[in-house]
Image (cartoon, rainbow, N blue to C red; front, side, top):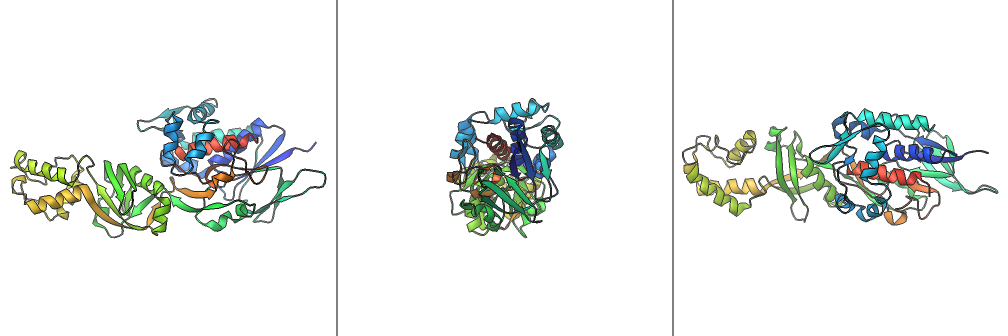
Length: 410
């Protein structure tokens, strides 16, 4: 008797996890994974600086779902089937130990993403998953078979044709709506995809000369909106990056796209202060540090080059002592420390962090099976759905969860 066929579209984390688990759970089904490029698990490879941020050490579902700008209610149901503890156990049962770092991110103890890749490839080999590379999908439709159940026909760009009883679409996010067309033709609606987890470009701004400087805790706001985040910030040669910026881009993905990535950002470099309390603090230094040069005595322990940049921005002489700080300059310094404004013009996507907001509407997918509510036998996993998380291992957790649930073919 001929085996039934499952075709998984997409060789990333979600697709691979679906494929290897489906092949193990359903030995009577032949699993074929198709990947449009010449690379498998490319995001896994580069994630976390090549270490693979497998998941996050968050063991409360209520806390975990707060890390997803889109899809939190959907994941609240899905996480009951496969959660962070299950991810850790799955890899550890296959010899891959997982460790947590101080910020909660979790990595293989080898600190090498190849460990995760090798584990998944080993599972694919063990359970005889067929892998097709450079196989881009052009169209999918259901065909009626005489005396048999309806089957899927999958047409590839090279005109090859695959037939399947089940299909799991785990082909990641897309920058262009047009690439969702073959999903749309199956009857599904798409929330317009836009980039998430990107950095802010500040072309020509003096601060970019400080590239490489990191500040542990800043508050960043998008002017004219309620969007704000607090956390580490990194200055780059093109602008602003780091967790605070990436999180802000995730929560504001739709709004910032509407603004065509041109907007004003306001940074409080010392979020424990506001402008008025900072003025009082600076006035106090005029007495407590009176005889010391301002440039040499940085009372906030900010990186020295950043402190010197702030002083140059308010035209403060390198010879000036705290006692001689004019009130007008003091107020300018308070403003720049607590509410410095920058014009953002454009974005830069982190290859290792890039995520797409948008995708198949979640109201059309069963969160307990990942099966389409519109097309029986059609499943989804990963970024193809309108789910995305902030940086820190949350997007991989969604990939493992949705991939595992889809693999059960309920």
